[in-house]
Length: 324
Image 1: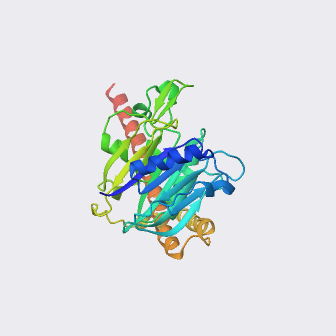
Image 2: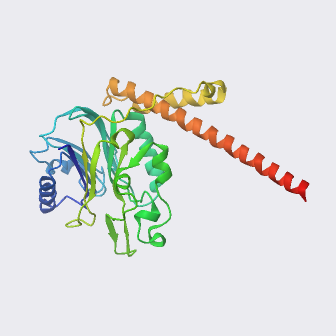
Image 3: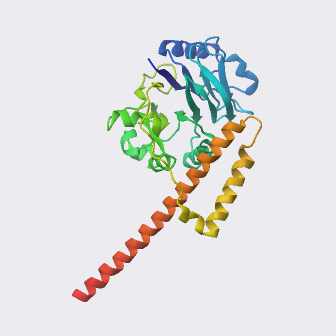
């Protein structure tokens, strides 16, 4: 059957009635992993959102005000071994690492702010990249579409910023769009802006593209967002990943070497904490440095192509002047 993932922005769980609705939805969806955004629960109130069917519940509440807040819960019926948990003090995300149904995974749920989403998400993706091990599933309310032209019914009202280039930079994939092509469907209706948009979705790592059989958008009922779901078949082997090799040319420049040394030092300063196991730290630092080197190589390639383009334009103008 596969692992069922279910995500919903609940717009507050301080009411017992709304908490009952959440667990009712989770039972009806038969989900194994539950991702919830905008819980509005303080750290002192988190114990109220418990359920015997979900013994593993990881909270990231807002510390000062009843706003934001996310949680990630894993059902008793699925085998799960926890490695580490990373939470945000402002209640914007929680990152959980472990082994789910024999698959090493990094699961995260996120509630992005209503403004300056790109800068927030870039920081989040860098954090995720620095600690992630195994397959990656990030789900939640990103408050910005992946592709404005396809994920909004009104570009003028939804804005013109999207995430296409950012998620490509971090090698993540919008699985709903991958499975549904150019289809249009929305997860949020804004009565203020008279617009509809798909701002709730899952981003997955490359190796999961062949393991996800279904990604759906449900009906909007008791929340102002529609739930989204995902089915992952953990036993299906993915395609062999291309073997990465270090481009030794990158290490010939002293400035680049200094930048890499500084990046590595900063990684250990921010991530060598008691809640992160030495195993996760070792594996994640390799992934982080590989990503840093790939970004460096990509930047140099763009510089070379730009220089080549300028040279070709100059030659073209020179040829035109000679002809005339």
